[in-house]
Length: 128
View 1: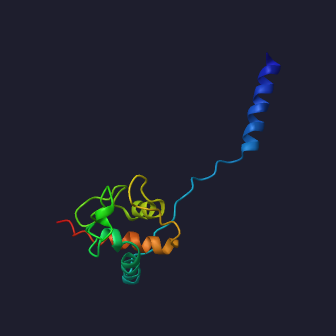
View 2: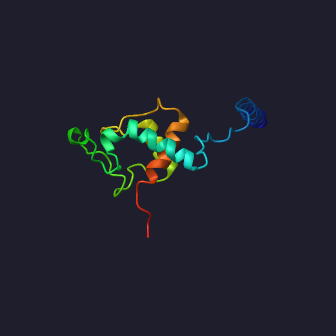
View 3: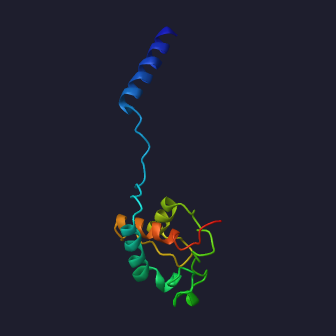
């Protein structure tokens, strides 16, 4: 019995040593500081990448919207499907939304996706 306990203790120590210290949880990309230049970049990218579906004002009335089911998100009046925080919007831009016309735009540079994420938050009127 004493030998069994020693074997178990040695096994536990060996397993812990092999596993090593626990790694810190991976953090996602970090949002850059919101500046007028970042928002201008986002506005320009929105005009070339998003307007066809979401419309110039972000109200979901782009020329391609009529052919999409479900309709594109209206950023002016509707909540964002995966959350309203820039980090959540950034993830949606990169991953897309399966079952909708929202394609993944992971090919865009990280900085461009952040610019878009922050810009679309400006399309909604400020809460009173």
